[in-house]
Length: 338
Image 1 (tube, helix red, strand yellow):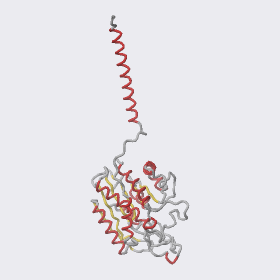
Image 2 (cartoon, helix red, strand yellow):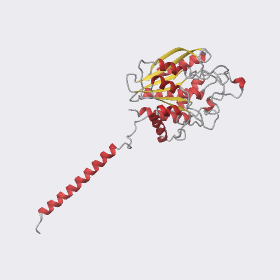
Image 3 (cartoon, helix red, strand yellow):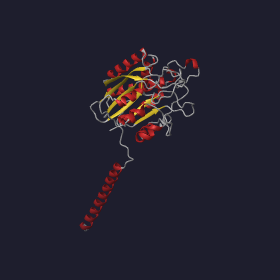
Image 4 (cartoon, one colour):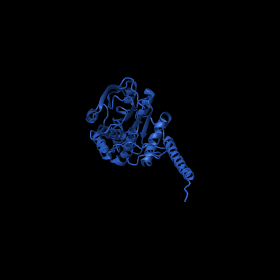
């Protein structure tokens, strides 16, 4: 049989050409997929948030009693927070200031700051207030309205979550710098039973002071996250109004992360009300966009739940599942920041 070498060669060239086109198409497809903005790269390994540990930190604060400025319990708890941050290898700054309350009481206040990766110029601010309300002014029993509350949820819960995050940052630092700030004198605002003239800006005295005098001259951060009332059973965290207006990208990032982690029941994709809180003064004084993760109960009279600013705000209302949802979400956001 006579072999037709020219025909064989042509057929071989055709096979090679087809294979080459197929490889080129595969490489082009892979390149297109890598360039697509909707393809999410693999997340970094995020340390496991321990809700039991966060719960313990909440309880240890509450065990001091009401942390009202100018009291022994307040001083002792402040020392505890400073020691905890140092134990977790943070660079600690303490701002001591005499702040004037709505009734002209001079409050001996301390903002307590723990910095991780302090030399990194790429930074995120995480914050919560550590004082508790001097009045139970939402208490139905009017005889008890002028008594201080324990503030397990309103104050201690946010601090507890951040202490657990600090513990984990000591073990595995994120790639960016993080500043954890415990603001003081947040909850000394005008009570509902006050008979005098209304005064603006009587809440959030510690963050107002920090905004005027940051712990580091010229301090800046990409954005901040404020945790307030983040431990209550059945809590829901709607997108707070001021955060939506001034930090919309960060709000979307946080709520999308919560949805991806399966915490949609805690973080509904819905808008809540605008709240006077520390994040407003962080933004107004420094122009750092700051997101307030705060419990909002649309069916309650106050919007904050039935135990808000009452003596029922104790350890009985603290739920590990809520602490876990908030802690894991914020951890995921922080550790995936590049």
